Image (cartoon, rainbow, N blue to C red; front, side, top):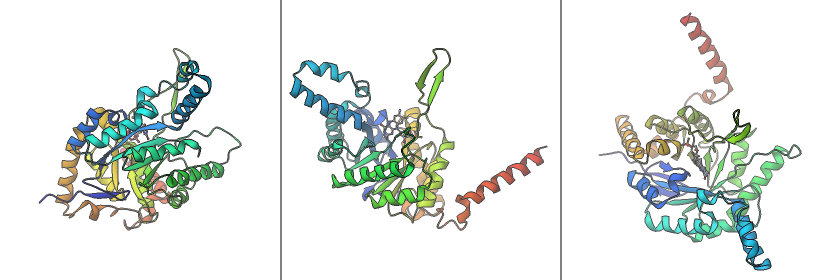
Length: 338
Ligand SMILES: Cc1cc2nc3c(=O)[nH]c(=O)nc-3n(C[C@H](O)[C@H](O)[C@H](O)COP(=O)(O)O)c2cc1C
């Protein structure tokens, strides 16, 4: 009998821990269906941005106030994003159409940083049928007068405001650059996050020496990157009362298994699916299932978190001491090599 791959994420029962993360692949119905068919247990739609919602509201307001002439001009303000996620109005239709077409849970995503009026939109996503909302709080804080405490407070206010607008569960997707992340994670849970998505992957700008311009560079991830979420998931598992989703760098069945052992409830993929296509999910599901059976685990639930910091028998493995050990190991290998 094949092992039980079911898992619970944000209170949702999923048939397996493999979830398609927000990316252009979850932006069209055809690719959503292909993802479901290949075994995705849930999908996260591409993010709608706070700026887009605010822009649409301003545009409609301006149109009513000043007449239709101002409309075209206003639309040029945040236009290019509509090629990515269709814009606020059509996004609601995408949520509804995805729900209609799929039988797996559909999670809508909003990217926002300020707790403004746009938050009401989360409720509309829920009404359109989203089974949960993922709030991505991506921001680059450049104001030298804004302290980390004030930025975190703003994020927490945003999370509780969005939480307050919803009945469905809320997951919060964060970046890894917090000074005291265990504390931040705990406060995000207190503010109403039912799940944490670790970690948002920042796209860093680059300078083009030919054209002397600064350009955003989008590189797909490699699996070196999964070790950052692995560490934090292992540390938080069992300590913060939230579901944990791993994102960044997941490419192979071994990556999936390691993150589950560390304590992830689900493992999300974007880059690998963009590279290999949805069919990769079939391969990963079979690979995970085979490994679980070979190791005689009865289920994913039994395996989840069995190598977390709390349970792995060497809590220091996820902490600073490991750094020293890695340096010493490196040195002794280098000596032997000489
Ligand atoms: C082309 C592309 C578009 C993405 N769009 C979004 C998005 O709209 N919202 C979001 O939260 N993350 C977005 N992401 C981030 C992914 O969902 C994922 O968290 C990140 O790429 C790390 O996972 P990976 O290593 O499997 O790619 C995007 C990633 C890629 C590569």
